Length: 169
Image (cartoon, rainbow, N blue to C red; front, side, top):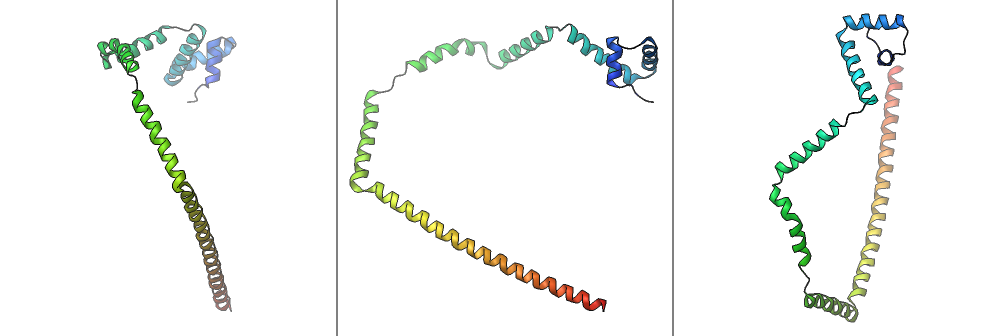
């Protein structure tokens, strides 16, 4: 059995078809459960489009709020603002802040006097240069390896072609 297309059903629901087409579609809907269910769904969608109901949004909001209230006890929600105020009341210790600044300044002076910054820079440059050399060596080795494999493959292919040629003689 051929089924009605969604466009045919939409046009039927919208009242855009002739009486002859309406009768054909009504006859088909009387005998085909699948098309009747599709037509019912499309009719519901059309009704919702024409007259949107806000009940679904309110139901959804109520559902989410009920779920939140069951997962988080109400007392915790009421106490939450006071917990924020408690966190804001904690003040950092000024002496601790000055200690941190002092330690940072002492470390800077120490690094500059000992030349630790230059040493780190020098070691970094040496490391990068040695890494570059090793990378270049690896690239050269890899290239030589690929060339060797290509030569061996070419020799093998030539041998295979020679064998095929000899067999055909």
